[in-house]
Amino acid sequence: MRNAKIRFYLLIAAAVALLSSCGYSFSGRGMVVPESARTIAVVTFLNGTNEPNVDVEVTNAVAAEFIADGRLKVVDRGEADLVLKGSVASFEVVPLSYTTDA
Image 1 (cartoon, rainbow, N blue to C red):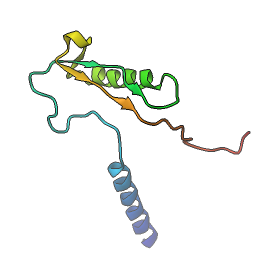
Image 2 (image 1 turned 60 degrees about the vertical axis):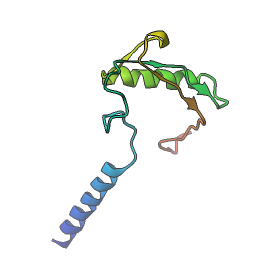
Image 3 (image 1 turned 60 degrees about the horizontal axis):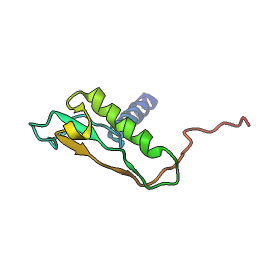
Image 4 (image 1 turned 90 degrees about the vertical axis):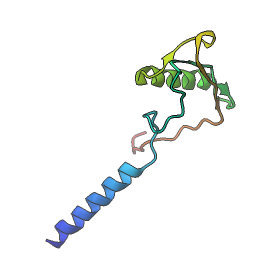
């Protein structure tokens, strides 16, 4: 019985830790976009790293998120109600797992 209680509390603690962890999301929290805005232009981000093409990859990923979200239509800069500009300040490759295989 005691082991079952301990497992239950560990499961609850793990669920709370996973649900409260930092996560990337565009999902609507608050209103940072004017109600009248219908279109957005995503300008190619500036690359502040030594990694080639990371600016294009990040720009494409951001534009894809707006397209998937569907609240704003991604258009050319001249047609846009809003213009999103950004820069990539750093680039780092971090392994997700390790194996003993060579």
